[in-house]
Image: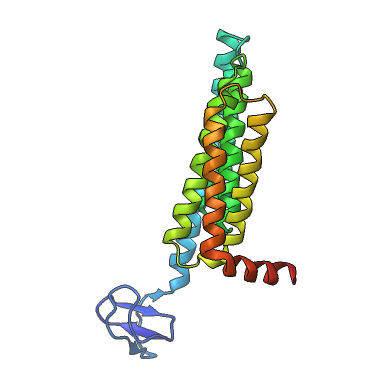
Amino acid sequence: MKSCNKCNITVNTNKNHCPLCYAELEEENKTSHFPYFSTKQKEEKIVKKNVLLFKIMLFLSICAIFVCFFVNFIINKKVLWSIIVFLAIIYIWILIRHTIMSKRNVFEKVLFQFVGILAIILSSNLISGGGDWFWNFVVPSASMLTTTVMILFSLVNKKRNDFILSIFVLTFILLILNIILRFANIDSFKLISEINILYNSLALVGILILDFKAIKNSISKNFHI
């Protein structure tokens, strides 16, 4: 046990400086009656605060969902827009847990964002009566944005070798997706898909030229080839 004369507390630590004011600590005198202070108390307060915040957000989310469903069924039952609100709230919760707070690799995070956003927009499209705009504009645009984000992230991140194989695989998947949209008559406005095919192809070639060795090492490391 050590004591801080400035804060007038006793600290349960092996360090030489006070966790509050960073002044030098002194060995506690057995006859002293300083109030006891432990760094664990601060950690417990933070945990309790986070739990309280979590409960408040959960309560507000549930209230928002119930209010939207109630208003939807009272005003207009034909257009179930409350389902979109429900999916959006669920997506936000998963986004916080899966992407913001997790330590997953960039491949999983980007893939989740791509699939999650498309799922919400697709549900909105179906609920509103459908239309070609989802396949004509949303999917190709989201594909191009995803590829751009991954490329920019790989250029500025110092640990690019750790996830360059994942970026290469996801870029290849997006290329196949745009090829399907272009030649399967799903996309009636084919220009954006054609641009995407060229864009993703160039991205794959660039990754192979710049990071071929890193991809080869990553394949050997993960698949023992």
